Image 1: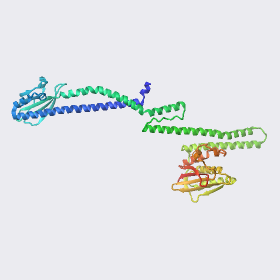
Image 2 (image 1 turned 120 degrees about the vertical axis):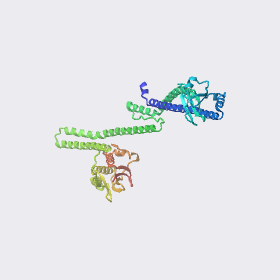
Image 3 (image 1 turned 90 degrees about the vertical axis):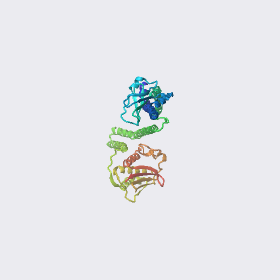
Image 4 (image 1 turned 45 degrees about the vertical axis):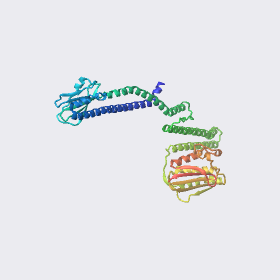
Amino acid sequence: MFDRLRQSLALRLAAQYAFVFALATALLFGALYWVLGETLVQRERVNVERRAEILATVYELRGVAGVASLSSDPSPELRAFFVRLVNARGELLWSLVPPDWVETQVQLIPLPLFGELRREVRTERIPQNALRDYAIATRSLADGNGLQVGRLTDSRAVLLQPVRRAFLPAGVLALLLSLGLGTLLAWRATRPLRLVSDTARRIIETGDLAARVPDAGARGELAVLVRQLNTLLDKNAAHVRVLRETLDNLAHDLRTPLTRLRGTAELALQDTGDPAEAKAALSDCIEESDRLLHVLEALLDITAAEAGALKLDRDRRDLRTLTERAVDLYREVAEEKRITVTLDQPAPVEAAVDAIRLGQAVNNLVDNALKYTPAGGRVTVAAHQEPGAAIITVSDSGPGVPVAERDAIFRRLYRGDASRSQRGLGLGLSLVKAIVESHGGTVAVDDAPGGGARFTVRLPR
């Protein structure tokens, strides 16, 4: 359990977020602390400079007595200022030291050198020890003397000390709160990922292909991930179902020829003394073997075409030659069933195709049309061109294809109810679809204008 929590994505995300939050909070507090401290110091400097300006004006009007009289104001705000008058030689003329000042610290404040008359105010921040700082304003007077006004800046430390004391517990509390809330939010946000993991584990352990990731109410990328994974599972389940149906149909449809092949072989092995019967039995074996090989070759061709590995020898061809060959090939079959086969191809239809492979597809379509067209019916093979496409259609006057089966008939070994009475394994249309799509085209079935089915092959020119 501990290892799972340690490896939890939610916990790691929460820890990273908490670290970033703590770092950002520390930087923000440091910046605010520095800005607040500098603001307080600047305020003290402004007060000192203003007081120095006032005392300099009083000195110009009333001399040292006026400065002493004004500095003796009993107001605590005014008595907090340090005042010192010195002459040009640095000798003390008069001074006022506030009660909270230490004399030794006053002695450490350097006396200004007034070599010339200066009207500006100069502010200095003089640290005397680790606990007390001073702001000093120096002013040159008209008679050559100098004025110094100072004030303690300990108010900054006094005001900021509670802030420093409150930051540590508040920061720790905020860090723990952010870690807890971050873990909760990250745990909720990553719930779809855990559902995906649980569904995958369930499929692996139980083999239940019907398992799907529940809708956790997620939004954004995780919701898209869940939907795409469920779609992938649906497609995989469909492929597995089709594979099972294919294997079942293949086992069912191959049972008869294999049984017939075995029976013929046993007949040939019997010592009847008639070489003609043995020769006929062996001929039947060869015929059944060829039929089985044809089925396997068709399956291999379909697999290769669907995988994009079917080799095509493309050449610019007039598709009318392929349709004419197909009609000639099945002319005798049509005559036996008294089916009228019509060619409708008034103009050349050229496309870059593999004549042999596409010829197989056209032959299968014509054979399929003749197989399901009743005696006395008709089959029409047409070829024409459209902008950017070459079209081959094979129409019949048979029963047609139900709408519900129009997609299924192109699956391997699929045989509808109407085709159960016909000889075949259900590979012809699968092979047509695989060959046409390997050429970059499409094949579809719909209703023929006069009734029956119409297969349409559309190829890029």
